[in-house]
Image 1: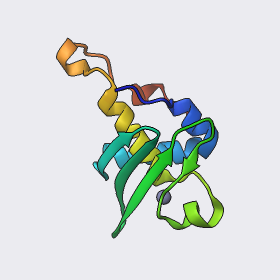
Image 2 (image 1 turned 90 degrees about the vertical axis):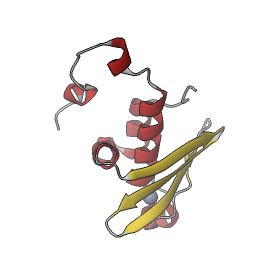
Image 3 (image 1 turned 135 degrees about the vertical axis):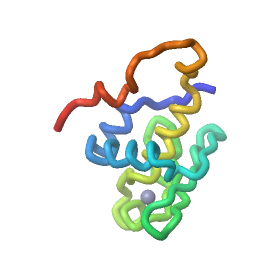
Amino acid sequence: MTVPITEKELAAAAGWPIVHAARKLRDTGKVLRVSYDPPLLKGAVRMGSRTYGAGLRLGSELENLCSCFDSWSEGKICVHSVAAALALMQQSEPSQLESGAVDPPTTATLPVQ
Ligand SMILES: [Zn+2]
């Protein structure tokens, strides 16, 4: 399945600091589940002692559907929804392990801020 959004587009909508924090959530297993039923991306993301029902409507305009304060109070694209989207992208990428590639993880290519 192809995810119709890129990390760059997420960064443009949410800002790189959010994308970095979201990567950390994903890489530490905080994205409990994610699903994509076009155009709705949904996920459950654990942060601190709470689990957020994160989600994005992927379309010409990105809409945040997360249950957190940042989302409903200010309409921001929050770290939870970005983490869910990143997890979905990772799932949809061809596995490098199976192809025998030994390249380092792509996190090494992130711009330093
Ligand atoms: Zn959120």
